[in-house]
Amino acid sequence: MTHTTQGGDKSAFEQLNVLIADIIGADAAEIIDIQPISRSVDDLGMDSIQIVVLVERGNALYEGRIDFSTWLKDRSFSDLAKLTVGDVADFIEQSLNANKTGEQ
Image (tube, rainbow, N blue to C red; front, side):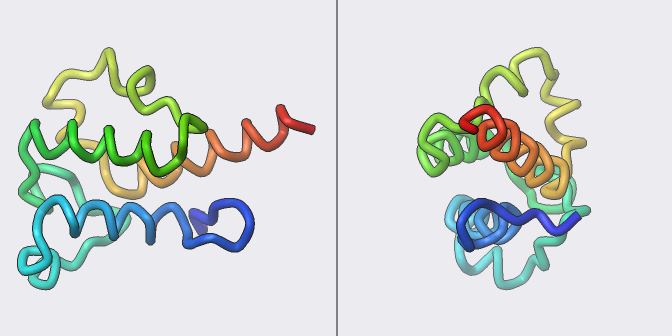
């Protein structure tokens, strides 16, 4: 899947890359090659606070078009740790497409 967003914007994956790099720090992001298969905890070294920050920034970035909180609410930290960047990008893309279809 290409993980593209609406209107020629950066892809969902590219936007996540920027958010994650900002959260984990530019130095760490330069060392870590963020890929769709990267896991938040094991590969990116994110902790629970950083995952919450990612959700908050994602909600702000997509201005309510994505409901990260509902998608994540019933997942344990262990489940969250297993999510890949690609999983999150897929969710974003699916949500944006569903919203786009609902608007027509």
